[in-house]
Amino acid sequence: MAEININLTVHSSSTLFGKNRFPSLQQGDYAYYQNIDNNELLPTANDPIFIGKITGVGDNNITVESNLDPANIVGFLMFSKSKLINNSSLNGYYAEVTFRNNDSHNKSEIFAINSEVSQSSK
Image 1 (cartoon, rainbow, N blue to C red):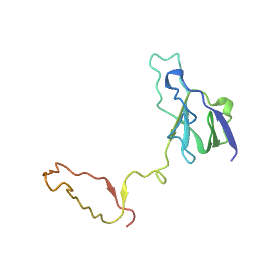
Image 2: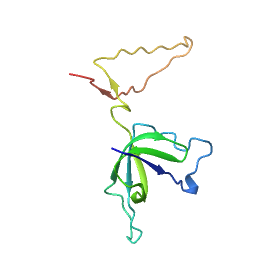
Image 3: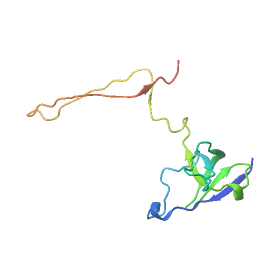
């Protein structure tokens, strides 16, 4: 599979100052694009087109493993995170938690404790 270079154009209202304008975009993410038909009354993005896996991130461009022609990639560019790399849940079989009040002069009260846990293997 070939690597293609896609230049990123940022809308002026969303431009961030500084070198890294796309802080959450990283190598290993997956790139998609959506053609927008301006002739539609309400343009929608129901069928994003998969470009490929992002192999590099520059200041104004990304490098993607893809066989697509970069000249045909127009419209809205988006990306998703790999669930293998960016797993937001806790993994494991058990958890041990200790709550301490380090202020012995004032009482503290816990109203709720929440967690999202996924078993890492069976």
